[in-house]
Image 1 (cartoon, rainbow, N blue to C red):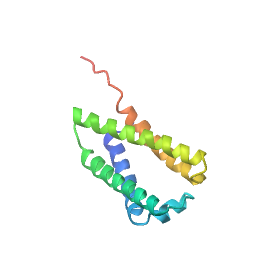
Image 2: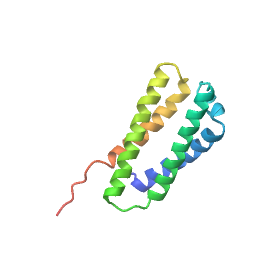
Image 3: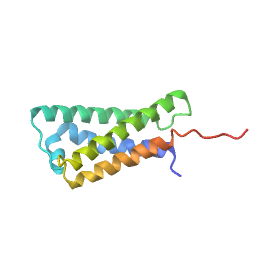
Image 4: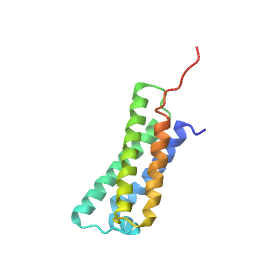
Length: 127
């Protein structure tokens, strides 16, 4: 059974490994997945890279958080973020915007969404 701390660290590493390249060389990163970016796309990609860096900070510094309303809110936000990522990435692959390599992106978002979703399930505590 994976611990929340482990999932948060995995998410932080993913955000680091993707966020920095997307910030600095977005055209290269997106070309790997078969997409080309015009000036507006480069801007949006860099905004996405900034979002990943924010997620990196959130997940890294929340990794040792104790059970609380704040931790629940963090897990909920990450679940929603990754669940939306699944849908958007899936649409992009199925519509041909991204090449088949992007199935890895869909799978990664799905893994994270399911992981954070699992930690939203209430645990029944015995008295």
